Image (cartoon, rainbow over all chains, first blue to last red; front, side):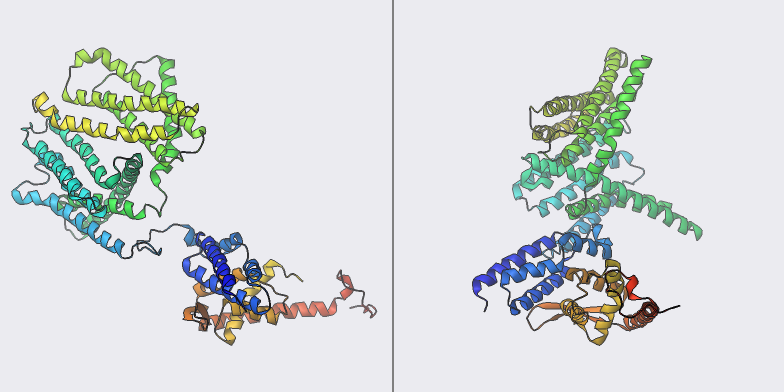
Length: 456
Length: 128
């Protein structure tokens, strides 16, 4: 009574209906299977009663109820399902099964390795807490090579890329340790601060896999960095709570665990958490909403308002910027924050969307930051001869120039975008293309500053 | 005749539990049974039964298991638990109380005061 053409048409219709159901977050795969069994039974019953297969399907779907209503009823019963949960086992067919546990094992293995690495120098008499200079200069070298290794493994990069990245880390180790730094000198501190920035680019090359040359690949790395930062802060907060309670309860039985904490828990945790947080960001990528763009949305208007009020106050009172030692660093940090706000709103923006209110706010923020920074730079330039060129000041000035150039051109591009002259992607390309500049400057500070300024 | 939504929702628990108390069953068969018993007057939207079943499962009134049906498809069967039987007993008491109350009212209330019904042939009972 049923012919094959009818059957295959019916199968197509059922497949389509099933795929609609699958898209509903509140209805899980097992529920879809249960509903599908119901639908098929219903269709069979109606066909037996004399309906054609397609008519039977329509009636059966009608009786099942509208997808929206169904989804709503399921959501009412299973409200937990509307909260996206980080499920580490891949449950979608088609995803490689078993790859997640292995990846987790590799990540935790590397985290333990990073924890061991930070304790390894102690075997050679370099004590954490005493040889501060050594640990500060090398901090990133204990964990970033392992993190890079994780991505090399995960993205299956070839031997060529592995060799080049290994060479970068070896060179970094050489420059961090061979110079005769004056202990605690400003050049040593600068080197310790800038080496991680330079090496982060190496992590990025590994992270992007073969896509480092593309704007999209670099943009993914920017997104990854933002999420990693947020996860790291959250893990650090949790670690702080854990450490606090541990201290309290051991104190109750009269045991002082502070030495253990300082020598073991803190350094090992700080290192291991980098790898664990990176792995978590990778694992949750598609499951949980990215936080960095959400925070950007919240804070862009606030920062824009703050800058406008600052500039208005400055104009009203006529006060010049008080040039003290740290003022340049403060303005550098302001530009970094503004750049971050720009980057993470760019990273989350739909290219095709037309300019909106938020884009105007973004331009207000950029212009405000540029004007504030120009005020500070003007004040400093007029008195730079009094201060002289210390390594700190040159580094801060260099960073200011780099950030200023980036933000100035971003502003130009953004205004052009608002006026419909260029596509939004030009701004994205500018930002991703600029990434190496930060690393190159950081490398200059690490490599050239010590000999230039006499290792002070 | 359309039965209103609240009444459908309120009666779904005792109806489903009572059908499962007869024998283990699955969604489609439960719906069919309801249709037969109500002579088509209680027409549930089929899909809505499943959230009800899942709620009863969460509350521990029923247990579910997957079996391969005669058709060769996997099918989810439900079985009432001891807790479900206790719940059913409670529901029955409550519904019987409601039913008894309403029956009492229906018997003393002349049908004529209800719109949409033909006037009763019998004269008004006096002093009822």
